[in-house]
Image 1 (cartoon, rainbow, N blue to C red):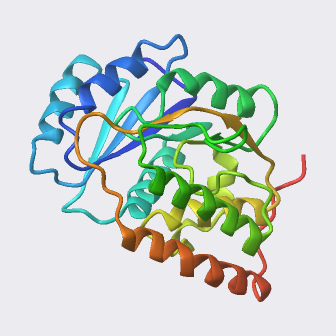
Image 2: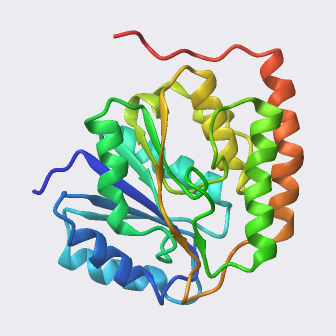
Length: 249
């Protein structure tokens, strides 16, 4: 059996146009990554494609099939728990649609495995605004959402809503995953905020985010509404709550 210290979690819903290409692209990387697909009962046959590929990559490709579209946050939580149970040291979040470039995976891995950071963010905003093919309104909304989160929470992270991440396993073992409350994109903010409050070192790696070319975006205005009000809730909650701390070496 092939063994790896790294697993990439990819949530899917109607990603038949992308899923085979993203899996094959990741598996061509020099580093031996494994992939865990969290499949939310896509009616387009995404799961059938993954099952076919599992016969080709039985020791590297895994899938959790859920009964329906249960939210991005719950998909990642399910993936985190699976990855912890299977003792992966480095646990990644990545989209299926190539908006996150697989070529950047080694950079995130290096930050955690070689430079000693506990988490690494593929950041769109650490060196300007590195977003391609998004409408200007969406770019501005995303950029100022991250600035808003910085202002309210005080965390020193430029891209607080980023969904391209690498965590060391200790981070996810320390955070009480069952107490992560948000299901949409506010989940990304809550995870970063919680990791920061637990005392973990977080790095940002500049990446270029390219809007999907195939398939349909899952973004909508309710996602931003959850994030806007959720940040205030996070900050207020943190004033009366203690966080488990990173173990000292």
